[in-house]
Length: 316
Image 1: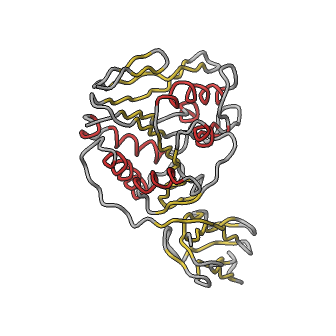
Image 2: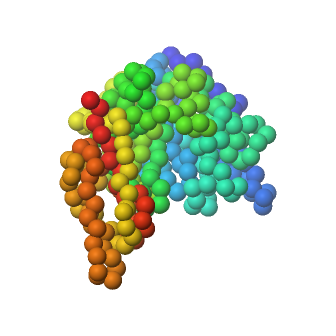
Image 3: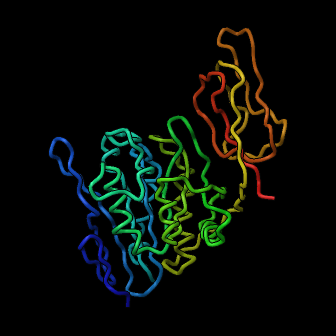
């Protein structure tokens, strides 16, 4: 039998499924915004897993992934352990459909936060105070930015074997070595020995059903591997990416891709062509390395120096 769980004064008993409130935040209109936290608990002891999304208000793929996961019958009736799901962390930016908070800050640069700080600092503080201490590990779901489409990938730190082992259980198509950034949830969680992996898939404000399905399947694999559910999903033949580079435009014009997102490429392969809109010139873009396409810029109109294609190189 698991012991009681408390989130900001709200108790969830063993065997209960409840929605509690992380905290509420007041807009300038005196409107109160709340962050719902879905908690699903088995009566049997097991790991406590955090699944979070909507760190940025326009990252809809992650929100949809969590919606699908928590709607499944086998997840609603866990065999062991606890699932804590926060489908929309940044309710304020989600309301506005923006990446940043009203003050222009990025929530994922506000950690560890402050009880009396800005919106971002307060949300970060509440996550660090009420959620992080009660979990064992987690996955935070993100997407690419506007017009930037990330192939489904999981980011972790290869120097930490526990991170890699967790990523292998999730089994995303790509597993990328990604160092910690200051002010992020992932870095501050690591300081507390709570591994948080980052899933990236698709682009902002646009559903990518391949990325959504990979995110859902990864969650099910992870939970099944710990005995939380009984639902097997075949593993991907995950590719480990150690280094990466962006291919940039040498000229301005209209860019036409010749390769698919996620595809393997060899050095010298044609990636696309930039055409002058007046029909006078064309500039072929070639791959500088052997690797895999891990992200693409869907913007057809490009300027000199714009990032076009993100290439990841395999671990050797």
